[in-house]
Image (cartoon, rainbow, N blue to C red):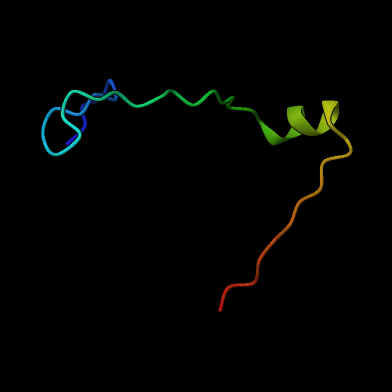
Amino acid sequence: VWNILGEAISGPMQGKKLTPVVHGNHFWFAWAAFNPETAIFCQERS
């Protein structure tokens, strides 16, 4: 079981900590304005 800080508080990984993932939250219009080469791929649902 992991807590909100990414620390395992029980189970086989107790005492371990997750490595944070760097990310950004962006609005599409802002991203597209500064990254016009961006391509969007869509997978059909079955």
